[in-house]
Image (tube, rainbow, N blue to C red):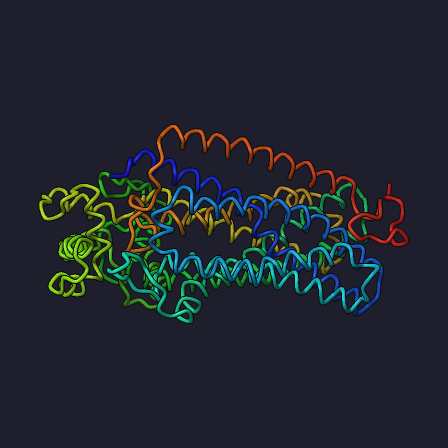
Length: 521
């Protein structure tokens, strides 16, 4: 039996690691594409300012990329150290996209990053541009394969459970790759990265414009990022709606938590704009609703309805009862794999095996489970509503705020008077953290909303962790916190130093000293 304190600490450590790593990923995805766009303009126009822009923002990209790699590698090791049962249970499926990501995307990206940084004087302009595009492609392919792996956890397809090996086994690689959740999430995540980079570039450019330094570079960078950002923000909001539609079909419990929907209501259903959910009472306090909006947002019609927590828990009770024979048959097969009766019983109830596993947390002998234990396991199928509900609203609110910001940014920059709007330039600097916080909130919605499952409806989180001691986990988390604190200090120091130094001051990162005039006063 797993120590649930160890399970919770394992979850905490992975959450801290993932949240920290995810600070770097969106900026890498988006900045690589912006670099490609800037260098394209340089190759077409041959204006040195666009080369200088590419090299300067390339410096910041390289700093962010290096820290992203360093923090991402530890996450993959954690699957083996802290989640060994999960790794054993789904290693055949989960390992495939991670291996492809390493071979196809990460190595390609890392190789061409070096050429991009140091190849300015060794490659012709068109060749160097191709390298920059390959870096951008590698960055986004890396995200694709990671999200394919994650999508299996959210919506497991392309695999089956083999009672002979007691493991999930891959049955269809195309089904795994073209999982609807993976494709929708990849596009949404990539474009969210474009928004992050656009906000970052406009914010740093605004910093220069406020101080009247590197004005030409800052104005051109601001304009490109603003145009890039307004299109990307419209895309991320639109695709977020599509992702919500896909998620509603695949994970109704997550949707119920996102909307704090405790009871199933008749269509058209209202949208809880503000609410303070109580998990113990299964009700909301201080609710502010928008009539009809939930049906329109989720089902795209006024006739559509989605199940609430009450209905989902009833469905879970039924599936738990159906999962009990699957668990008992599996135990028989583990002792006698040739038992035909047990195999037939398992096949009949296989789709509810995960629900039987949920019950084992409260009743190790599921055949002796009481109604109270079954009901408790059913309640566990509903994720923590308040953090999912508010994380979703924070993400959406920040997305709308960024859209409004980019619309104003485009208007001002197209009028060529953005440098005169000091209040707006100050706002642009303060906007830099917003997309990072929005991305983190989106990750919390995706991962907290999947609980209590590591693999949705197949493998509960409580079963997935390694059997470490409590002391080991406390020591491990402390070490990670200290190490990652050093990482964030280094990241911030290098970024702030590069921004304060500005472009065109020294021929580093492949810069050509001939293109580097003295810093403007």
